[in-house]
Image (tube, one colour):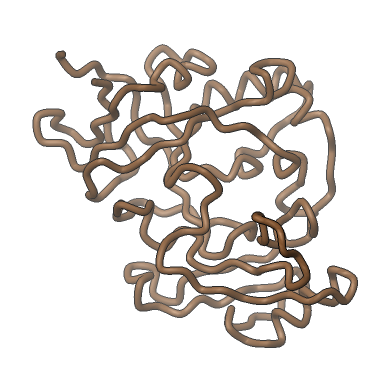
Length: 245
């Protein structure tokens, strides 16, 4: 099958600490487990024995206001992470004072830090959404929608600027890079992303508003964006063409 130009990579995002703010990067290495430096740290609910132990913005909305960053962004595998708190204080992610501050914010319950060799993703290793999809959700919600609410790894411009066009990629393979005959990376589009209350949280204030999730629910049965799974590791860059096979 001849590769079809489906769009291009408009933005690349990684999240050093699960549920905290992300950082936009011009390029990132893709491994079998996802983007290098993505969700390598997470905080756990110390008293939660369930299969979903993570402390996220659903439990503590203010978590999205914390700003982590790799000290050496080019080498996240070897780099420490520092986190700026909403008050402006800067701490190492491993500093017990950070866990203590989160515990206080969460009503005194126990909080534990974990470092992972692979990203703490919920379903797929890499997430993607189209800019046209975000614009459509904005129109349905009747208000501006900050793209950061969706916490995507890839934000793309799809060919034809059709909302939810990325849904049609499911079950197919994405070649990313200038030359589809020798792609920089290859990913499989595996499933739609079912949205949760995270999209309702303002990434700057932590304030919740229900209009965003309602708009997603009305438009596509609560799904927006797709999950991808790496088939060939490589380097992704902003501006890379996306070819559909």
